[in-house]
Image (tube, rainbow, N blue to C red; front, side, top):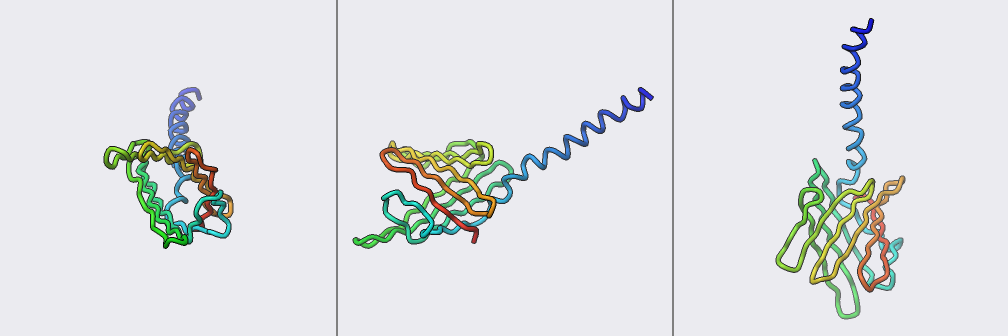
Length: 152
């Protein structure tokens, strides 16, 4: 009997490991896609309000791509703002001498740290049970913004 248990135990352990590994990575699969800003629900914290905005996320095999595109309207006209983060998780993306961006998972939160011209912005991406994406944006000398997005 001991020999049978001794032979079966390693296979049971391997089976449990193989079943648990996909489950550990399944939590991030639902973030992929294009997300559309809900400006009426968003707290711009006194900053210029965006009229439209999209964020596209692709997270595959620890390679994270995030593209942002926002349109601002103001009395002087308005402008578009867009940039992307594209690289292996936790790698630093550099564009020129004054721009770096780094994306990494911290539990269920996707955190992106971007430094441009000496100013660091930290974005925390979270998802609510109803499928809404909530992005907290922290910048020096500014109040935190809370942006709400729905999947397109």
